[in-house]
Image 1 (cartoon, rainbow, N blue to C red):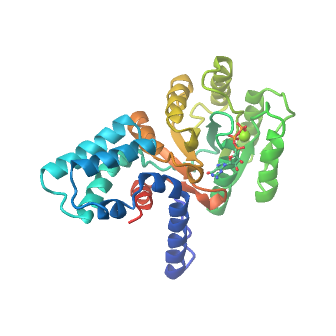
Image 2 (cartoon, rainbow, N blue to C red):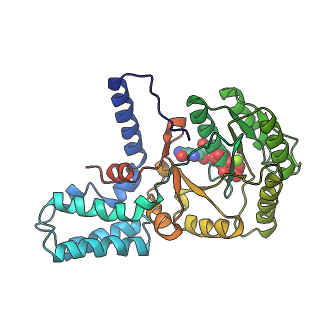
Image 3 (cartoon, rainbow, N blue to C red):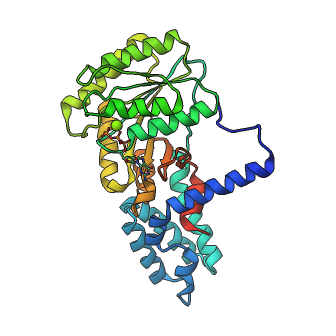
Length: 323
Ligand SMILES: Nc1nc2c(ncn2[C@@H]2O[C@H](COP(=O)(O)OP(=O)(O)OP(=O)(O)O)[C@@H](O)[C@H]2O)c(=O)[nH]1
Ligand SMILES: [Mg+2]
């Protein structure tokens, strides 16, 4: 197993990088934070006391940020109970109660992707609807893997969209990482099969395979993903080691529908939620965590490679509540 930390830098620099990363995360979540109007402190400061009215007002804001009915109810019940037990006497109390109820929903989904180095290669298959951020996430991941010393290869399995192959090749050039491709219109399963063969013979650590965007309702295209999985398994019965569903957080509750369909059709082992920076619907993370019970591997909070972050429940909540 590999953890992606740089150990060759001093502790001051490490602290600086950590703070910089945290402020990037905070900036990325600002639209959702605005909707939640939490700064919880601000919300509370405008009121005389923490009472049922205040909690109801907050419940509305959770719904507006796409936290979803069930997750909102869970948080509200937790806060109401604390109020009833006279445990909400200050803004600090409110902050801590909120943090702990939110963490109650998210912590189980905090399961970072561990690249097993014994697999040569460890195969990651990226799936999702059109424009979710698959190819960009592949580029960002490839960069992070490479920076941590892994030997990476990419497979241009999107043979459908014009310019999809070029988009991945551009990442390959930029990062100096090989990209296995065929011409547009080729069979996606065959491209990925070739890439896996090549990665095996070169003892590559990680192979990341792109696929064309598809709607979860398009049965024939979902069958194609199944075929890709079958073909990969011929070369390595344990592969793919990760089937990563990429979801655009901006699609809000629809992301949940996508997650259900993709999971039923092909089995998803991890989720990446992209574009949290561009949306006020960041509460969808809570819905996904509560309803899907799947690992949330990464969140995307911007365009740069370092804006793809390993999902950390408490860090996410702190950035959202801006304490
Ligand atoms: N702001 C922001 N933009 C992102 C993020 N992730 C992806 N994008 C942008 O979203 C757009 C679509 O990304 P792609 O990676 O091409 O999406 P895709 O899923 O591969 O799309 P198809 O190949 O058409 O299915 C691009 O403009 C990306 O730069 C993110 O976390 N934040
Ligand atoms: Mg793409």
